[in-house]
Amino acid sequence: MRILITGICGFVGSTLAFGLKEATSNCEVIGLDNLVRPGSERNRAELRRHGIRLFHGDIRNPSDLESLPRCDWILDAAANPSVLAGVDGKTSSRQLIEHNLIGTVNLLEMARNCRAGFLMLSTSRVYSIRDLAAIPVKAKGNRFELTAARVTDRTPGGLSARGVAENFSTDPPLSLYGSSKRASEILACEYAEAFDVPVWINRCGVLAGAGQFGKIDQGIFSFWIHSWRAKRNLKYIGFNGTGYQVRDCLHASDLLPLIVQQLQRPTAKAPRIVNVSGGIDHSASLRQLSAWCEQRFGKLQIAADKKARPFDVPWLVLDSSMAQRTWKWQPHTSLESIWSEIADHAEQNPNWLDSTAD
Image 1 (tube, rainbow, N blue to C red):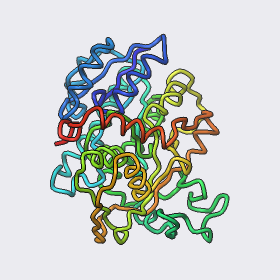
Image 2: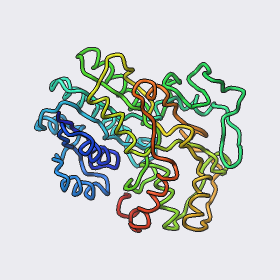
Image 3: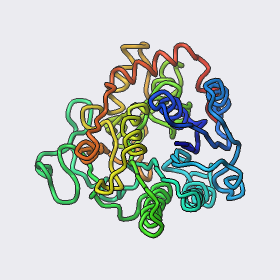
């Protein structure tokens, strides 16, 4: 079995490439990357040392895909992951859509022509901003918690004490980023039905781990820890400048057991789309992360900007119960272990932020 990983020189793509090569004895991993992200060359060299064939190309260009070897599966880990992309002046809206949606279309056409399966890494940002912002929370300790009045074992609307489930609203607005990923999900499912293409879509929470690039949109947990160690300026934005906003955290390597099953033991009865996240037990606020960083690295003054930003939400934790029921999957790496791994990496690579950020 040959697996093509797009965006292979990124943090998630390279983590999955190394893991798949180690976890499977009957597959060949190859990769495609446009190498535009600072830090990509580091992973490119390491991938080559592990005997993984790399191809320089861009999923936005169909001609870049034509010369690739035929494969059995396409694992799409290429995306512009910023929720502010297309509206922040750093990336044009057309660039975002071309990368996250048109790129998916090109890969789906490749999968159709090769009779290959398609596995897509999606995002928690496909859920409605308006409905996420309306989730009832209250400050408790140093984080936001769900208020009990709305949350029972399974409330209508896809919200429970376990978090946001797959049937939570995906109605716009989502952000241009979220809409491009949601549109990609829909098209992938249509290709699955129209052309009998095996398709799995994993909606990921915040992925983290050592080696994540030094940009805030690559992952807030990694960015915060690296910035704290380097004594960079940090600030709590929105939510009255409290830092109480909560996200879940998942080590990228914890995706591997699920992906291996999806590649090797696909079943027609399984849902195409599942949430994959750290869940409630692996969630934290920025304020909690700061307390951890202070113990590890010492004090740092955090500024506060009370002004709200578009697309920010107070609490976003995914409920991965469906993945657990269907695939017997659950996260294994503790929050403490993830943060410690990132901190160790930050201490061993003091110039990481400058070398992997724009």
